[in-house]
Amino acid sequence: MVVITMGVAGCGKTTVGRLLAEVTGGRFFDGDQFHSSESIAKMRRGIPLTDEDRQPCFQALRKIIEQNLEKEELTVISCSALKEKYRQFLQQNDQRVKFVYLKGSFSLIEKRMQNRRGHYFSPQLLQSQFETLEEPINALQVSIEAPPESIVNVIQEWLELSQA
Image (cartoon, rainbow, N blue to C red; front, side):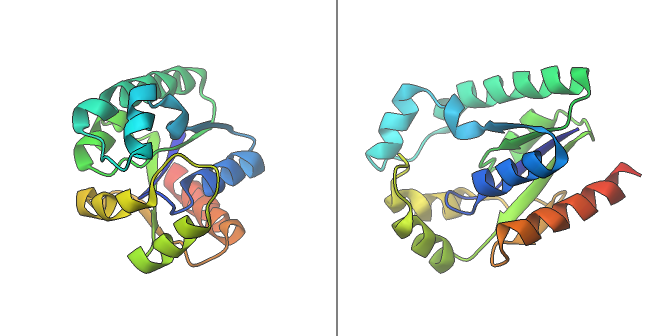
């Protein structure tokens, strides 16, 4: 199974994803590490990525998904996956690929991003992320107001139910 923690920048995808992988013994991949250097440079300058900019990252993540489904290893990936077409590409109609949407208000996430250090994502891009976001229908939706450990507990409970 592959679990993709998704949502806008600053919602906690990486924190929750890492913790979920740690407590379940799964493998973790941070989607941010698969962006091209050109895409990272754009984000540093506050320029939103286009669908074309994102495609190499999604292709790399899809390859990871395929490899880990073949190995039948629990894998957790953090990836914004803001649009439905991105999620469809990543999932390819395989129900073993599940999405967890980490949902929070603009003001809460903006505050978190102002306190975040050492990340290339420019906080001025947050508005464009909210404008691009197509909230998923077929995903577990979890409020980010809870601590990461509580969010991971909710995800684990959901995964046990969805595996039945």
